[in-house]
Image 1 (cartoon, rainbow, N blue to C red):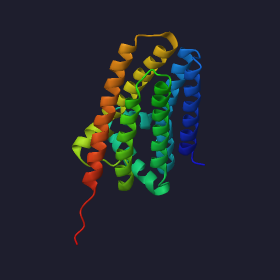
Image 2: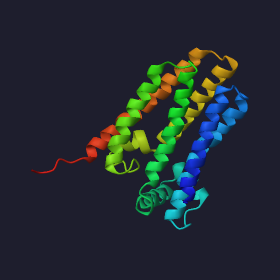
Image 3: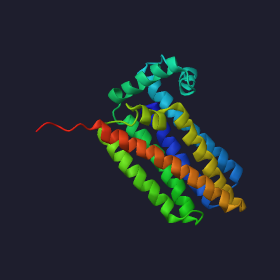
Image 4: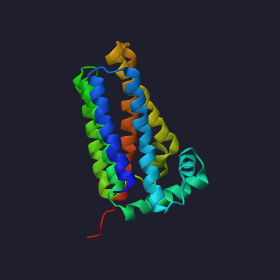
Length: 217
């Protein structure tokens, strides 16, 4: 089994454990730390995939620097990411599946616990369903061609921003459930995160439609 795939399976299993810990109101600090590690592991499976495609030429430090704005290293890593589609065509889609399980599980548990209203997860489901369908038909979600979608969806700033926003929002919601923190702040953070996700979804849908060219009859 590829290390990248194994990492995806492990982080998915950890997320199920995190959901259970949230429900039983286990130590919130431990749960939040575990959640942070689970989010961080998303970068780890990406590194393993790139390392396999490059046959070990890309080290972890190089990979991290490429995500922090080093243009030369970023180009090298992107080239190897594209090669992953040839080595393991299912890889990028499996990674996205792991991301979706993580996100759906968190939204679902807070709706189940009546911390958030039902319509929030419905917005997320609709957004991901259409965006994933279009990008899935395109082949991958990592080959953004237009400047708009590259800036909104696949830029390092955007990727870091969405991860940080998710961590802050869900961590605070854990504190709302466990320690009765003010829910209003949780609603504000949720609104920011959902807006961020929807805007990124629009860019994905735009890219998906843009990639389809009408065939001549």
